[in-house]
Image (cartoon, rainbow, N blue to C red; front, side, top):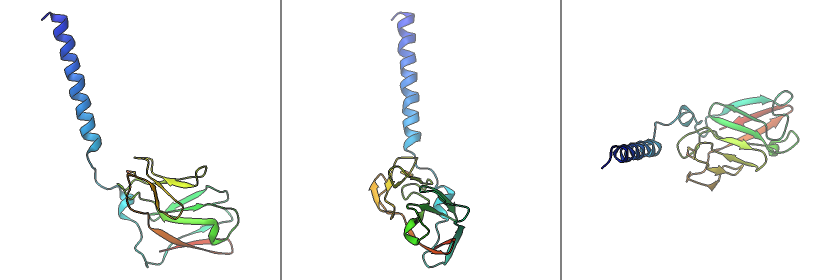
Length: 145
Ligand code: FES
């Protein structure tokens, strides 16, 4: 074996070994993110309020607090104008986002998709998001567990 051929094969071997390391670390499950541990317990009461005169003014706007994401899904200040679900993806706990164009929640880590009611549209998540009650009184929206 010539020196150049040996070095070429050695480089390929190192490259494959490093790629293998990367794949192993990608599939390794990490600890749940903090967002996964603070989803409110059902029946625990008010999660947070939002002043609709200053926040959530446009369809697609969101507010995240205390483990819940509140999203405006329609115009007007009625309960039906909003939806609230746990912010932690049921797959591995990454914080989800609301995608206004598609009208769904999407997890940025592995791409799970959830309806506005929290049902799984596409995995890898297998479980639905916990949904919370939204009520509107005047210009105050209240999320309740
Ligand atoms: S953590 Fe959300 S899809 Fe994996």
